[in-house]
Length: 459
Image (cartoon, rainbow, N blue to C red; front, side, top):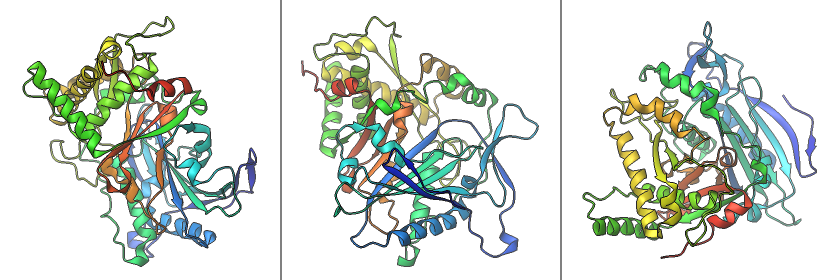
């Protein structure tokens, strides 16, 4: 049940690791038995929630209550206590297998190197400062791991902070399902206060018919290229908040440019399209050496002419024979936008934003409206987009309401998706405080982060 305390560089001390099983109702007729769900092998997602604890909070009681409520939440989300394995009799098909006794690793630790002010800032900081606060998945095919770290701070009188790291393997479920689990867990922790948990997940996978061609592409090593960067710990991570007013100004600029060019109808520039478009343009200028005067310095490296952008719309409401909104699993269909590198390098800010937002809007519209040939072209577009490595993609969504995940000690001071440092993705969440804005997390090498933060000329 427990591992002996050990030290990581004198800063993180793991105190114990418990193994939390799904709770039992005591009714043998309703007992969990062996079960298996089909899945596709993709990468883990690492989320980090930072909470300020009340003065005098009984930390031991907080941690014990988290473990107990986790067990109750796992009753409904039992596959998360299971493991990935090859389906019996298959060589290229995987399944998520649960059997009674399976459990989730719940690690308790202390960290004395930083406090909430150092970790919850939006300013660039080293990925290495947050990496120890999220757990690795145990070997053997585990799909969920939890780590609760008490941050002691650098000052003796500093307020205590709880860092809750949650790693979920994306093969088990998508972001909608994993955050459904997190909201269920948080509501279970606050049940005594009268909080009603969300409705339970739907585990029936017969709603979605597996396509062998798409499965093979996800399972192939080529499809996984770029998911785990060896220099991830040398990167900086920063958060950029776009207010509702800033998002509206981007929409107005796109509409104005469409009118100037005579584009009818104009691109459907929603808040999420505006966010994706602007951040894609900034990322492209930063990572490919574009400077403010439109020049570039790529070190002589050969580059493809276009830059792919990967977005993952939720298809639960869009499949033929609608999939329930509470369906547990993966029900996202990547769509790919591309933008000429030269356009990003030489365009004015308005031109670049219009080009980027138009490309994102067109790609999303094609995916969500099920344009003719979308699924037929899907496999070849995956290969093409990942020809030179993983495209610039998205993790998270404002719809997931991660800042509403309250375990009884208040809303998070900050939520990070730490795994973007490994995958090269952009994390997205709703703006803090219910402002109507959107916040974005970016992880880049220091020299690229400097260019990302540099405002381009308004030529």
